[in-house]
Length: 403
Ligand code: NAP
Ligand code: MG
Image (cartoon, rainbow, N blue to C red; front, side, top):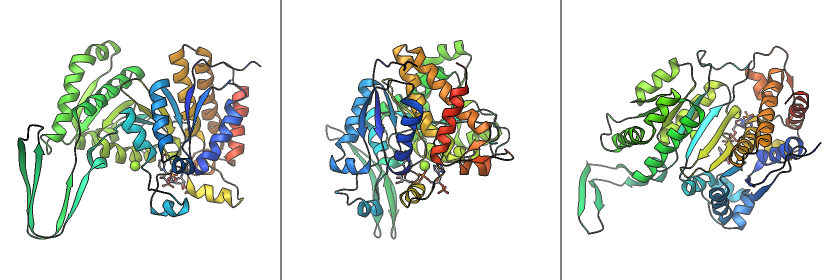
């Protein structure tokens, strides 16, 4: 059989631990026999990040701006324990944080739905996609542990030296302080990424903040979204028959739980972080959650929402069998190949990726799955497979599917 040709490379970002093992298996078993794969490879494994002083992460993000499509493996975000384990020169920053800062993108997370894995919220029959603003707020904060009595103020100094000064609190004892910011530019990018993605996927867009309490900070998010919607997207949305809907975050939470799904919920950075974990868990499993970073310049970086599955990796190193679910990592590959196909007008490549996704879903629906899925599946006699056999079962399903 002739392999599918590619005209433009994908940016391939390799990663760490168990997902690095799955990465290799997925390429060998599911992609390389069918696609004449062209990638520009960046090794974001922690050892190589350390060896290159993390330059490799920056390079991979810049390559993504150039080629527009990337696929990323999960990576370790160093902490004190990892400093020791990998003898690191420095506590390198989260690669996802670095990549997000360079692409100035928004992260969209959506669950993969399969029959037999019933969401905890029974009325959720369609996926809910969470769009998380990926810049600023508490993720770029400055904090002070206040030692004792004193005055705290918020001060802004303009380039000409004039100042705006607001009292925060008069401390009469020890306490804590936090300074956070965001930029109009980033909020605008966030809004445009959300409206474009909603139009792209023909889904309603919901947006929520705490604007009743935060009358300047959160309210600015609300205003910017409305201005950009009215000026740039209203017509498109009306033509597509989709809706933009703003509500207070408390109200949004209640409505989301009562909904059937099938929309995008845009959240500020922290809300998106927390809500995406809740939504993922309620749909069944973090290992069935996809993630794509969309930049306003039209670059896309696909990955699984879960981490490097460290516990399974240590079992693997001891020579024990693992049953790690590779579906979200496979969907990162298929998402990237589909987008590459779409951008290059390469229909064969997109069709291949779509068929591989159907093979993943059908394999699980046929009762073949990994251990964690079997625990939440309503399938009566699931066949529990190890990491490699599960990928091979997907390949077998793929081979039986028509075009
Ligand atoms: P994790 O890798 O997501 O795994 C947490 C637990 O969830 C696992 O121990 C496993 O549970 C279950 N799980 C997650 N993915 C699974 C899969 N595909 N198949 C089966 N079970 C799965 O989170 P973590 O252990 O907190 O983090 C490990 C490393 O990943 C950390 O160094 C962290 O920095 C990194 N991380 C990276 C990213 C990213 O690159 N985007 C995101 C999050 C975390 P059981 O052990 O009970 O089977
Ligand atoms: Mg989180």
